[in-house]
Length: 565
Image (tube, one colour):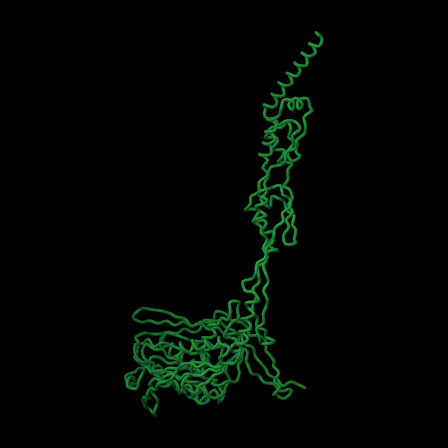
C-alpha cells in the first residue's frame, strides 16, 4: 500500500504541473496547437501573427459563371468577394478558449488533435451585380421591333419581323453569392421578353401603307387648276412605323406650298407702267388663292384614306393691299439706290428671259411695311407669261429649262434693294459661282418657281417704286429703287472669301442622240467657295451691320459625246 501511494502522488504532481502550464499558455492569447485556417497552420501563433500568415498565403477562389450557354471563370474578388481573416482567426481563438481539460493537456504533451477552420468571407452584392452585368453583356440583347421597309426593287413596303430580347438576371445571382460567399459556380437565369411592335401588329400597317400608295389628283376649288401626285410621290408623304401610318409633316407642308404657288393667282397691287417718258398707273386686281389652312387639313385626310383618289383644295379671294388711288406721286419720289449687272455672252433665249423679267418687275410699288416678293412681282415662269427655254441650274447640273436668265434680274434687284438698306426676309445663293454676276462675286440672288423666292421688307416708312432699265445692245441691266429717302447711309463691302475648294475632275457622259465621235461641253468647272458680304447701315439710331453668306459648291466640267458603235 505504501508503494502505490507514492506512485499516485507523483502522477498527481506531474498532472497538476502540466495543467498549470497549459492554462498559463492559453491565457497568453496564443492559438491552440493543431489549428489551421483555410489550410494555413496557425497553432501557437498570436492573433496578429495568424492574420499575417493568412495574408501571405490566401488567394481568392475561382468562380465559374454560366449564362445563356456561355461560361466565364473569374477570381471571386472581381465579384466583390473579400476574405474576412479577422473573423476566421477569431473563430480559431474561440475554439482555443473553449478547449476542455483533456484537450489542453494533450496539446501540452504534443498530442493535440488537428482542426481546420474555413476562411470566412463577405461579398459586396452591388459590386457583384455590376461585375456580372459587364461579364454577361454579350448575352443581353434588346428586342428588335418589327418594322416596315421600303423595297426599292418592288416599290412596295415589306415587313421585317421582330425578334425577342434576352437578359441575364444578374441581381438574383449577385444576391445568392452574397448569401453564400463559398459558392464557386453561379448559373444566371436568362429571361426573354417580346418586342414592343410585333410582326402581327406591324403587318396590318404595312398592308395599309401599300394601299395608300396610289396616284392622287389635286384640284383648286372653283377653278380649272389641276395637279397630280404619282403613287411614289404620295408614298413620300408618310412613314409606315410600328405605331401606324405617320405623315411626314415637313414634306406634306412643302408639297402644299408648291401646289399653292402653282395653282393660286395672288392679287395684283396697283403699279406703274412706262408710257413713253411718263408713268401711268395700272389698276389693282383681286386674285384667288389656296386657303392653306383648310387645304392642309384636306390633304392630310386624303393621304391617310386609301379610298381617296382626289383632293379638293378650298380657295379664297386674295385682296390687293395697294389700290390705284393709293399710288404715290412719282414726282415726289427720289432715287434711293440702284443695282447693276452685265450679261455679255448671253444667248438669245437668256436675253429674252431677262427682258421679260425686267419688264414685269419694272413699275412694281411696294407699300410701306410690306415685303417685296420677286416671284409675286414676276408671276409664273411659263411660256404664256413670256418666258422661253434656256440654261438653268437644276439637280446638280446646268440643264435646259424654262426661264434661264431670270436670276440675272433677281440678282440685280437684290443689289438695289440691299443697297437701299431693306431687311432681307428670304434670299438664296446659286449652287456655283456664275460668271454673269462678276465682278461682284457672291452679291447675287437665285430664284426658282415655285418656292425659291427673293424677299425684302420695305422699312422706309413710305412706298417704294422699282424701275428696271435693260439695255440689250450693251448687255447691261439696272434696277432702281425710288421713294422717300429714309435718312440713312448704306455701305456694302466686297465679298470676303473664307475658304476655297478645288473643282473635281471633268465628267464624260455618253449621249446616244449625238453622232459617233462628236462631243460638246455642257457644264463648266468652278471651284467651291465660302464667302460673306457685310452691310453697314448708319442712321439716327446708330450703326448696325448684317451679313449675307454664300456657299458655292465645287462644280465639275461635263462633256457629252456620241458613243461609237
